Image 1 (cartoon, rainbow, N blue to C red):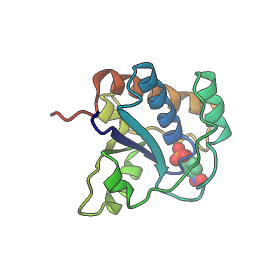
Image 2: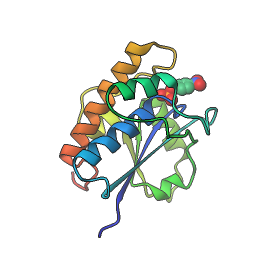
Image 3: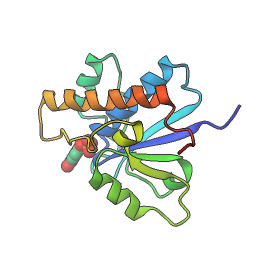
Image 4: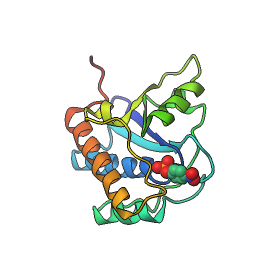
Length: 160
Ligand code: 4NP
């Protein structure tokens, strides 16, 4: 059995966008029978919410789409993540810049923005933290579309 590919989703707080992306990816991998082949985790560039469950609005939004997020707990990006993951996939340009600034020279992980990595138009996943339920729905549409395409096209596989 080959080693699983390891994907880390990163946003600022790890309570809205990256746990939603984690839940969507896990769900689409499970549906595709690929849960054993690809491991998914998430983290924040900031540590203010470490140990907390996702934002209740993120949980409610994912639940409306049949995905459970309540068991997830926020954590901050750790230097070891650069060795332990194959891809670190960021919600927006600020996250990507912060991640790259922390990458050791020896990093194994490659870094990218989630949407273009998945093959989607658009770059940033907008931060819904100061928004309302419709902003969380927008985030869900983006991350779930990215998750479906990534799984269908096996975007984690080496190529290009
Ligand atoms: P996230 O959203 O990065 O999608 O988890 C945020 C969560 C918390 C904060 C900002 C964004 N905050 O400033 O506490």
